[in-house]
Length: 146
Image: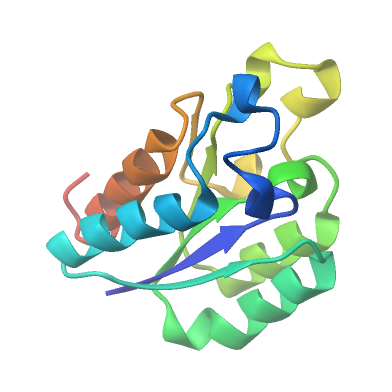
């Protein structure tokens, strides 16, 4: 099983950016934890972090035939990117949306997700652990264990 992981804009700054909201765990550490969890579940990850919307869309298009599902933290693009939403929807693969913070408890503009309507589910508010919970949910779904 292969899962595509998308890290959106500014997530490369994790660990130093607004630590009171996003915590002190770096993106490299999140990727390490994900890889460890994935290996234990027999899953291979293909991931990309980009601050550029088009790069994320191109990644989805290029990797669609190589993955079985998507684990996505679109960050700010969650609320603005119809292009990313449409690219993910076009794959017809399962999507799990993840967020470090609880976007429903934040500013009003963050409460609307363009991805949620096409996602199996959304995991938010558990810091770096949100990614692991999302990975577990997605792999369980793909294995038919949900």
